[in-house]
Structure formats: structure tokens, C-alpha cells
Length: 423
Length: 115
Image (cartoon, rainbow over all chains, first blue to last red):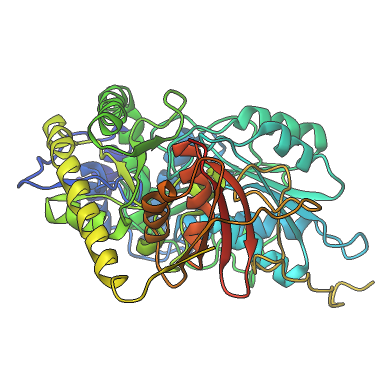
């Protein structure tokens, strides 16, 4: 009668089944920046388009349009919760991964702070995402919370002894450790960190942004954060999971959305697309992982062999399958990214000249790694092996060319006055 | 103490990052100057002030051969990346990073030629 097969049923089926057909890449260009944003998964695209017509209403309202939006939102929540391994009521959708991190850090710290016992302290590894460090810095300035950044080894792996020692100190309010590093791909020892936190009675926030949809979420967390853009969902959707029994208080003006955790109405179509692509990404993980891992291994082996004075960073084995980072001596990262872009390869860099702040990557700095001439290659799921082969072919001459240019510029600039004083 | 009461703000650290304390156990960043030991005097000073990385590293790589093995090259630089990259270069090239010290503008890095 009337509306025989409401489109939202297709949407829900798409979310549940996880569509998996792929659009072929066109042209002679290769996108190698999946760690910033994975290209939109076809299942996300389909769910998004279908839900635009059905999920626009306010899901808090009792009318039919509102109920339909509410149904889609709750379907997305159940799907995402099943993938992440939590209860649906523990999971809230945020407007970004950064917002999820800010809410997790601020809400957990403020819930445990007490005026009588002083501001306390927060522990984070030195290689956390900048959103974690910025939230910590904000707390330090606003509430006087002390911040302890714990060290990492040369591979970028958090030092578990250092982390455990910091966590076991008096008045530790929260500890933060990512599941894997977003710049060098090294997996973090979350199980050991979780054991230390459990022993000390400290909640652990695990930022799974780099690994969500690629690896199962680790155990032992009290709070979990993620960003849909990193697994092939749309931009503007993040996940905040607060495990039952974890003390958490809304850090911003109260709002009744998302279990009183996130201000503002969620973008239901985008949230649904995020959930659909998380399902797809998790299902396709097995086949994608092996292919990406082989290509990353090829890059890790070839770059030091073909590019003189280059170093590959990160753990060779305990790592994310799709990220590889290396630095080339005597090259500036900006020129390298620009030249690679000209040759049809989109990569990112942790070098200072590429950052808005002009500060080198805090991850590379904490590892004691070379920050100039840095390139991060992060392969999307639909990468073609020949793109990687072609990249490995163009890289050595590009590095040689940029080195020549940098040297020539410096020589011509310092030709006039002598630059050194001999003692 | 009431919740509204203003808590004392933490003093900014030397790195200028307000309130953020680096763990002393961390391996990141340049080694701090050794206190109580005489500062070795450099044989050659390279002025890379105002130059962006990788220029300070290029200057060091080009000129370290001008001093004898065991002698010291001083690099003056103010690009923040130099703080990480000079020790990293020394580690990669097996040269000895002696120390970093803060100048009114920028830093002085001492590197001993090892071979």
C-alpha cells in the first residue's frame, strides 16, 4: 500500500551486509594518503545517498520522519558497536575524531578531578595524535592538570615501563595510548598499558583512529575514540565510546543528544554511511591486509636500497598494513611532496616546512628520527601494485633532483659573505 | 576549597609549551647539556641561523671533513627542526653528538668528528 519498499530498508540492508564492490581508479595518478582520509568506500557512498532522503529529520522527535531518522541512527549505532566490541548505549557519534578525543579526555579528567585533592595529572605517550596533546595542554592551562608525556623507542613504540611508572603515580586521572601510531604505523602495547592502568585504578583512553576498520579494537580500554574518515567513511563523523562504569562528565554545556555526551544533532546520513563502511572495511580486512602488507614491505625494502641516505621508520613487523614512513637526508619535505604530486603521487609529510605550525612532527621528534625530507605513504585499500612500482621508480630521481636544487640554492645564497668563523 | 576557586596556573616550561611536562625517562629530543663538565671548544663554527632545515644539516655534512678526527664542529641554528635533526643525523652517520645549548636566539650544537 502506497510505499511498498521504503528506501530505508535498503539502507539498513546495505549497512548490515556491507556492500563491497569497488570503483576503479582512473588516470595515471595514485593517492597515497589514506591515513589522512581513506577514499569513500562504495558502501558509504550508497548508504549516504539513500539516507539523505530518509535521515534528514530530527531523530529526537516523535513524528514519523523523526522516528525514521531515529531508526537509522540506532541501526548505525548497533552496527558500529558490534564492530568496535561495545554495547550500543556506550557508543556516541561525534562530529569528528578530534571532537571525540576532546570529549573523552576532558570528560574523563574532569569527572575525576576534585577541588579538595588538587588538580592531579594525566599521562599520555609522546606520540599520541595532536588532538590528545592539545586537549592535555588545554587542561593544563585551564585547570592546572599536570601532564606527563611518556617516552617511545626508536620504532615509535611506547615504553611500557615508563608508561606504567607514570600511571602508578599519585592522583593519575587518565592515561592515553593510541592503538597504533598514525605517522609511522607502529602498533602500541595497549595490553601492557591496560594492565598497568587496571593495577593503578586509572581509566585508559585508547585512540583507535589509525587502526579502526583495519584491526579489531584492543581490550582493556575505558574510553575509545575513532574517526570515520580513516576507514573510508565520510568526513565529519567520529566515535566516542565510554565503557559502563567509567566516570565521565560532560565537559561542555549540557545537551541531551547522544546519551548526553555530544552536543548537537548527529548528521544521520553521514553516521549511517560511517557505520556501513566500518562493516565493509572489517569484512574485507583479511584480503586487503595481506596485499597492503606486501606492498608496504616492498617500499620498506626498496627505498633504502635505491635512495642514498634514506631511512625507513617504524616497526618492520608489529605495524599497520597500510602506512610506511621514511626520511631522506638533505631534502626538504615540502619540495619532495610537491615534486611527487607533480609526478602524480599524493603523499603527506611530517617535515616542519609542510606543517601549518612550521613545527616538525612531534612523533618523529619523540622517536629521535630525522624530521626533514620526510614522506608518509599510506596506501588506500584499492591501491594497484603497479602504482607502487611506478612510485618506487620515480622516487630516486626526484630525491636526487630536489637535493641538487637545495644545494644549489644554498650555495648561491651563501656565496656573498663567508658563513663560518674558524677558531 | 570551593570548586569555583581559581587554581594556580602552571609556570610555562623552557620549551614554551605551557604546562606540559616532558617525562625525563623519554628518549625523545636532544640530550641536555652535561652539567659540571667543561664545554669543549669548537674548531669550526657554522652559522646556520635563519636557515631552514635541511640547510644546517647540509652545511654540517659538507664541512665536517674540514676538521680533524676528534675535533668539534659547532652549528648555530634557530630552525626548530634542527633540535631533532642534528642528533638524528649524528646517529645515522655515526658522528658523536656532544651537546645542545640554548642561545638568546636559537641553539648551539656541538658535534665531534668520529672518523
